[in-house]
Every structure is written in C-alpha cells, then in structure tokens.
Length: 437
Ligand SMILES: Cc1ncc(COP(=O)(O)O)c(C=O)c1O
Image: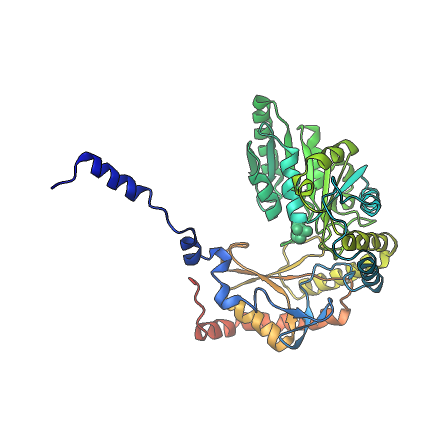
C-alpha cells in the first residue's frame, strides 16, 4: 500500500531532523592547525623545552640557543624574582586568596599592585586581570553596548577579535596599520553612531607581535581632533620594552595621554601570569563592577600578585635590563640587515625574518637549525603570512649575549644558502609531507 500524506510527512520530518553525533565533525576535521598535528606535534608545536628558563635550554636532550621566549627583560629567572615568588608561595600557598575580588578575594597586595601599575603607565587607576586573553575579551564586552561601534585593526590579536565577537552592535575592520583605511572606517562608524546614538571604540595593539610593527598610536590619537572615539590599546609587547621608562608604545610615541584604556599582559616583560587594565578612575571603577572575567572568577593568586610587585620594582629601578635588551635587539637586527635579510618594518624587539619557500621547505629548514646548529625559534607560515613566505620569529632578550647573536647570524647565512640552492626542497621532496593532512 503506498504511504499516505501523513506518513510521507512523518518520513520527511524524520529525515530532516536526524541529529548527528556532535563529535563526528570534530573527529573528521581537526581544524586549521590541528590538521598538522601528526607531522608537527612534539617538534614544531608542543615542543618540550627543559631546564631553567632562558637563552640556553634543552630540547629533546640537546642544548639549544633559545629565541622563542617573550621574557624580554630576562626576569623569568632573575634571582630576586625567583625569591619573591618562592617567599610568596611559602607564606600564602597557591590557593590564596579564595574567591573573586568582589566577594572574598580582595587583598592589600592586589590594591598596592594596581596603584603601582597605574602610576607606572601614567594613568589614574588600574585593575588586575587573571589572564590577558580573557581580560581583553571582557574589557571589550564591558565597554560597549549594541548602539556603539567598534573600529579595529584586521590583524589584531585573537583576544581582540574574540572580544569583538561578543559585541552585539556593528564593527568595522581597517587594513593593518593603514591610516587611510582607519580614517575611512572612522568616518563610516561616525555616520552609523549618529543614527544609533552610540559611541565609537577604536582598538589597536601597541606592538604587533608577529611582525614587530608599533601600532600608529600617535596618528590615531591625532584623529581624535576630527572624530569622537575612545582608544583601547593592547600593549602586550610594548609594556616594559618601549618608552623612556618602559611604560610602552604610547610613551615611546609621546601620546600616552591619548590612550583612554591601556592594557597589558604580564606574560611578556613581567614573566608572569596575569594582566591589567589602566584608565581614568571612573572607567576603572566601572570595570570593577562590570568586568565579567573578574567578577565571576577567583582573584589573581598571591604568588602572581606579590611576584608582580617585585617585577614592577625591577622594571622601575633596573633600567640596565631594558638597555641590555636594546643592545641585543640592535645588534641582532642590524646584523640581519647588513647580511641582507628581510626583517620587514619592525621597530620593536620582535624580530621577524622573512624568507621565500614552501611549508615543507620551512619544516626542513627549521629542523636543520635545531638539529645542526642548536638554534630554537618559532616559525610562522600561511595563513598567518602570505602563501610562499616563511617567517622565522626571533625574540631577543636581556639575557642573550652578543656571541649568541653572532652564532645565530652565521647559522642564518648557512640556512639561507641551502634554502636558495634547493637543498631543503630536495630533502622535503624525499620526506613525504602531506600538505592536505
Ligand atoms: C597582544 C597580546 N594580547 C594578549 C595576549 C594574551 O595574554 P595572556 O597570555 O596573559 O592571556 C597576548 C599573549 O600572551 C598577546 O600577545
């Protein structure tokens, strides 16, 4: 007997709503980075670096010269820092304080650190964040409502992009560090905000961590004369490394006052976990009561808080650390430039070396660097940079020596020669690298 209309409907509805196993997609598609796991894990990604943090560590049992720690000032292993961390651990343990700041996790040390950080970056007030990434997501979320418009750099760090994803109103990206595109999008945002009755939040990084360019803060601040917006700056790589006192990219460019909301993580120059946001007191007072990443999370632990007080003291009083960092940055970058390496337009400590080659060639080259020269660095490939380019990223620190730099420059000349004469291409063609993994 043929099915009647009711049966047909049931069959259709049934096929339509068949629910898939949620994990089916995940098991079949590991994501843009996860697809490399079988070839890269343990070596190119998730490598295990052992030994005391610093330029000389061990990788897979071998000594390596390390260029991939963001420990700009060499504080990670500074004896005073290690002692402060250890003393705080003995006095307070890892649990303290228990609870969120608002409820039961507030201490005089948190307050002291906030006051000292605010003074250091020349702002009225500051508030601590447990992590930079989560903190930034939450700051963006707290600063805007659906009537407000966000304008931000297309190459912004993931924490900015993900914060903007929470925004229920409009957003515009501008071409990376491009003044013309910034203006165009500020004009669009202004038109839109005039119809919604909202305001404009402009977000950039103080230093772009992959290519090492400073955000064009001075020019952005100057646009305030023409457009009505507030400026939020993520200065993760500028804090401690740029500016006369180390207050970051705004101080370096003479426009710290024009930054309305200043943010930095402790994960780089401070060699710690945690972060902070600094601004006028009324804005920080608002954030204290509206920043969901802190309101609904346990406070920054005492070890990090007291440890950060010590680090900040060293940032303020040991200018020789920053001087040493810059001696190394200048020696490395000028050494690369005189050897005709393309290091792009970095004007910070972040030192990218751009080479031309495929992903398999890049893998063979980095393997050569690690195994035969003992040099460990990070490698960045498409889609972070254009196809056919390889970016070797070096992070000089105050703990490196000039002989570390000489050793690296010599190794770089050798690997460039092998890249250009096809040695790596030939090795890559023999070693099966599955690009569609
Ligand atoms: C520019 C920038 N913003 C934010 C973060 C996130 O900071 P955290 O590691 O404290 O989560 C990082 C990386 O550490 C960063 O490079």
